[in-house]
Structures are given as structure tokens and as C-alpha cells.
Length: 388
Image (tube, rainbow, N blue to C red; front, side):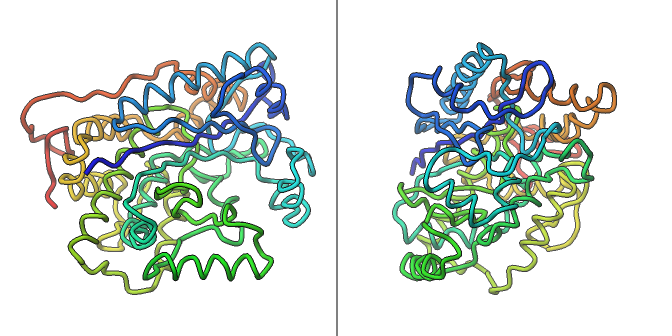
């Protein structure tokens, strides 16, 4: 079973000289005469939808090429492109939204929440057989989403200050009425009935405003991951995509075997686990989805990969994911790198680092070493298992 993957990336636009957020999406998009790029709610953000891919290598090449084209278009206007949950240098400008009826309506209804939607995410789509499977799979993958957030955490700064969080974007995002854990449903009919109730309540206007951490796509036969910060390095997006594809593959297999999800209906711990991941990133503890106890991020993520080994091998991603995870754990989160840059050169240095990583500086291609399993103290190397 080959589950194809795709990604949606959101990018901040900053003034190249000062590093400050600028509402230049319309001008930048005007320089890109190709499909796949689109505006977002705020005029300082551009979104790009990737193609559909069978392999992580294909996704990597697609994302690198699209970032290069976007950066070239922006640089001709004196603008730099930044992939991160937030950028350090932001000035709130209420009402500065894209001129679109839906976005204007959102700005009027949600006011301060919409005004402060100066955040960017990375979203991953994975094929599913049908909508019923997508809805039922949400319950199985939900416990493992907070570790993916920790991998992506790239937003320690807000309004020029260090928030103390690795992903402040998460804290801003959770103010929307439908953000957070998705809950469990018996199938598409149950889920769609809830969606209809929410729309009729007037709290949201359409299915696109279901902002759960994971959701079935409203337009495609995919399950969509929505919990992650935008990632400065493409390799982080690829790592998250590989892990999420494995989670979906594993869920589909378990559903086909009619295995019980193990869900007890209580999802408060999922919100708590998300908070912990947003606070810590890779540099502090996470909530282990198996024990629901505090554990080192390395322990949680290596245990996750070991559990997903059959799915990773089935999708052909075992070596790539193992190598990229070891690299991520060794180098730390983007939030950590940004704090170090700011310590030495202030917020502008952090923005410069983000822009450089976004356009591909110091970014290595995914590595898929061949060979037998190699046991290594303290971790999992490609080809090695920690057990199912």
C-alpha cells in the first residue's frame, strides 16, 4: 500500500534590510506566474502547495525548488522569505488582511485573534482509502502528534521578546474556536454531523475553519496534519512527513484488522501534551504517548520510530527517517538555533538565520544509508529497531 504525500508550507515575508514583517504578498505573488502559490489571511504570508509524491526524496526536491523560486521573486522586491511559526520583529496592524470576502469576514468576526494571526504552519497530507478511514484514523494518530510539533518548533519570539516557549505559534493558534485535538468519531457521518452543527452555530462559516490538529481534507481523499510550525529547514518538513505517513499507514493497517483504538474518550491529556511540546520543543521533556508520563524528547521520538518500524519499512522511509531524526536530535530545534543567534546578534540575527535556512543555506539532502542494522548506545540509527 503506497500512501502518497504532499505538503502545504506558509511563509512570512520580511523586509530584507530590517527583518521586519511586511504586507507584500500581493506583489510577491505577482512575480510568480505559476500555480501552487496563494495568499493567506494576512498580507504578510504566502502559502505554497506542493505536488503529490510517492517518495520523501520527491517531496524534498519539490519543496527546495519552490522555496528557491519564491525567494527569487521576493528578493527582487527587497523582501526575504522566512519559514517559521513566528518571526521576532512584528508590529500588529489590525485589519491588514488579504482583500477577499472570506478573509474580511473572518477579520471582522474574530477581531484580535485574526489581527494576531501572524503565524505560519507546515501541513502534511497523506492519502487514505476513503473518508471513513480518515475520520477513524484520527483517533489512532492523535496521541503521536505532539512529538511532531516538538520537531517543528520554530517560534520562540513574539513582538520582539522571548516567550519562553519553543512554539509560541501554538499558543496563539489555540485561541481559535476549533483548534486542538480532533476527538474520536465512529465514521464520516458522525464527523460530518459535528461539522454541520459547528457551521450552523455561526461560530465558524465553513469546513475550512475546522482547525483540529489533524483532520480529513474537505477537498481531497487525504488525512491532513496541522499541528506543526512552519520549518526553516526542508529536511524537518520531510522528517515530519515521513513520520506522519507512517502513523497513517499504521492506523490504516490497524483499522483493517479491526483492532481497538484504545481510546478512552478522554482527550484532556492530548491538549496537555501539546502544551508541553510547545513549551519544550526538543530541549525539554515531552509527554510519552504510551505511558502518559514525562520523558525526554529523545526517548519519546526514538520510541515512536521503533514502534513505527513496520510502517516505515512498508513506505520505504525507514532509513531516511532514521537518519533525519538522529540529525534533528543532535542539532536541536529551530527554536534553540534562533535563541542562540539572537543572543549573539539580537532579533535581526535570528531573522537572518531563518531567511538563510529557508532558502537552503546549510541544508543537507535526506540521506538513506544502506546496510544492516547497527546497534548504537543511546539512540536508533537507520536500520535499527527499539521494538514494536
